Length: 221
Image (cartoon, rainbow, N blue to C red):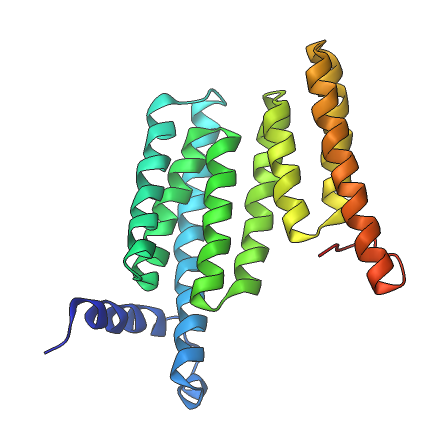
């Protein structure tokens, strides 16, 4: 008899195999097929959800909705619950629901949270590169919304995410967006926060450049 966990993986494989273009994938090791097919299956679901949510967002406007704000947190808690029980496949299947709810919220916070979660799933599920690529898209959407809301917290949080990814170009864009926002608040603490982040980022980039022996304007790991 199959355990619930093994049954889930078998079902997931069957679902993902629909996206397989041919029989060549069967020649790969099972672990490679599983992570690649899983990534394709989730990407397909995410694309469909994003399209539907984008249409809804265009009609509903840009106000922050209270219920979706709670929805993405509830959905993300289900993802964390599956990770806590070592059911990575289940967590990956649940993640698109959290992503869709974050999009519906029309707020930067949920997008950053689901982007962070997807990177963690990528590490656990063996699709780190694909997860980071998707997270970059999500973080850029979060940056757009944070700038719309004139949220210094949002812009700096996105900057932190891109700093973790070593994306120097986008970090600099975030800092250019953060400085005028800090000035608009007329709060000295806001300016100090931006300066503190910029100093940490410059120190990190300098350290990486010294270790590598030359500058790297694209990625700072």
